Length: 178
View 1 (cartoon, rainbow, N blue to C red):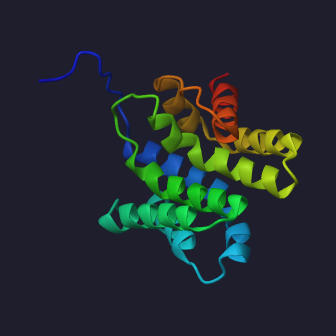
View 2 (view 1 turned 90 degrees about the horizontal axis):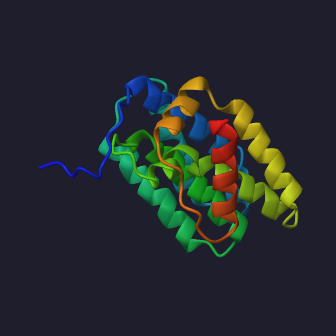
């Protein structure tokens, strides 16, 4: 029996590929920062490679999902905030392929999480300069394809959580829905 409070949206595989490409492009920009902090840990790089392969036409596989979780584990294991956020960006990029048609606020993180983490990484690297974060959001806004924007507009607004990541996510969401 379907829950009447749940709204489903149509999602095409091409749209999922566009979202994965957007997320992977954002995450790839900050992976060198993770590499400096954790030079022997390939998990975020592997997650990005799998996301890019999916975006290029490969199937969604258990390997893609496993690489997303592995990058998430890498983020949790590092003590460096910028490196952790870079690994989170990689995790979100691989997880973007698993955006599902159930329209929940959480799904916005699958679309925009990598971009928000990327902005936060570069902001942290610039000594918590919020102007740098805003500049990165502008970059991500320009990167987002019409398909990314269209899918985002079908989803509910993200929740207003605590912390800088949530602020960046909500700000980017607002920019892309305009």
